[in-house]
Image 1 (tube, helix red, strand yellow):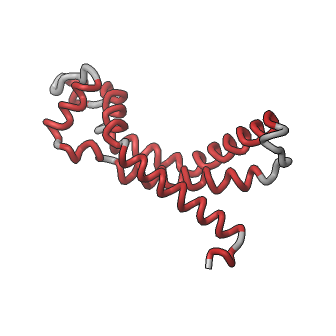
Image 2: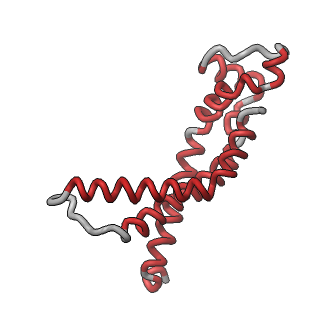
Image 3: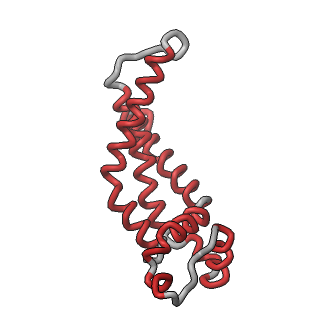
Length: 149
């Protein structure tokens, strides 16, 4: 069925591959992301500001306190939103990059490396910027959910 769709099948496959790979990678790295967000936003946490809860003194302190105070599941808090946000980000990146790259002249990576490199950089950058314009509201929601603010 996909072979009959031609370019639409490639776009669909890029979208699906980018989304699934993004969601898997975000789920694996969720604990690190959660600790990073907690440390970055601790000055906005009302309990820390009031002195009710002590500040996190570092990465290891944050890991151990989150585990003991909130349990292991807390490391994946906000991960569903992160996957929902990251799936379309990666999917749009892969899908848009090929479409945008088709608008540029074709260069051979073996004989015209620097123009080939420039086209890849430009198309990747434009694809990334376009996808972030679409998914920014989800990024904001993920940050709020994961940081306990």
